[in-house]
Length: 304
Image (cartoon, rainbow, N blue to C red; front, side, top):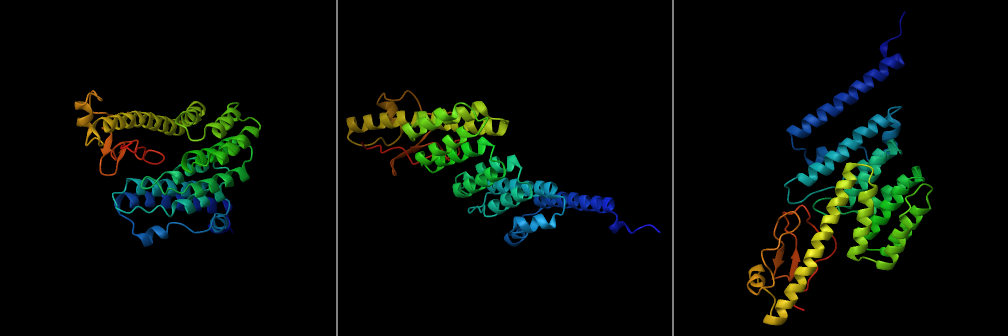
């Protein structure tokens, strides 16, 4: 007499795989068709990676892929949402579950850290969670020098803690097989702090050493932001010059053009006009620009 199907390992594996496929397919269809309520969203994950790991049996990698897809959907869907208040609260737990199920999931650590650090409203603005995620990756794969470097970038770019950033770059340089330029990067960071030139060097190194197009594209965007900051520094100098001549800050770009200080309306590298906010005394890229928001604080005063 043959055994029932639930006692046959191969049949069980096929059934579980089919259930996973159905789950992913229906989730995608539902997300495209319906707007999930807050309660429904909360039910999309189990709040403990260890619990999910035990439930996943021997399908850890497959279930990790599912949670990684959910993390991407949550981040991308929230970022594109037109809601006045964007909630990224599930992103950290989803990434934690993904990397608990599959500790060797390299993309989840590096891309997940980028998602977590992105400033609100384009992301949750949680560099602390990004550092914790990468430290988890280091614990699982201590030979991945990129994770040490990524933590250094978080401290440099998002937290402006240049001493800690430099120490992480030094740690990255000590990992066997690490890129040769990390030691000079550490020295430059400790010496130059948050200068634009130092930032440019960092992102150029990321661009040159990127192992995938996504990271290379992100590095290119950051380099373009630095270009915009250079432009704004020059525009501030012109506004200060106008202020000294006229005894007041300019009321708009047209006054700088009429004074012969500008030839035309100043455009950022994406082709959108820079914004001169006379009331707040700031210059910036347009909120509609792909470069918004720029890193750091607003650059003027205009009234020097």
